[in-house]
Length: 148
Image 1 (cartoon, rainbow, N blue to C red):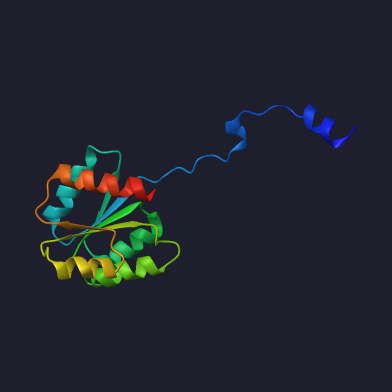
Image 2: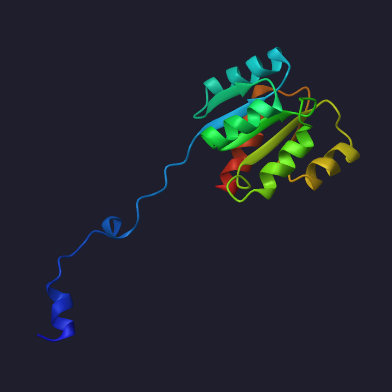
């Protein structure tokens, strides 16, 4: 039997059987803020979305949560410490395992300097306070959809 005939006797597979299984996308978002009201607000916003929000009150705990849970995205208040949030972003964007994580910075300072700083540190999205639930989810969904 020649090679062509051998190939003809193989069973026919559905196209879905030949392709690798689609990667399951983790829908966890990590919220980092030292302001309890902001944590509760963002967590409540994501309750009605397909995403699950985890919260932490400082950037050191945030780093541990990133390593353990590898979230799809991070929302961090620009004023959260003890590790400067900009250094936090730079650490993640420089690491091969975490640079794909979408990072949104939430800040009350909305000027050219703040936005340029966010861009320089690899921030994917800059959100100025105050914001509405609809604005946050719309901006986030658009950003994440284009990144995934």
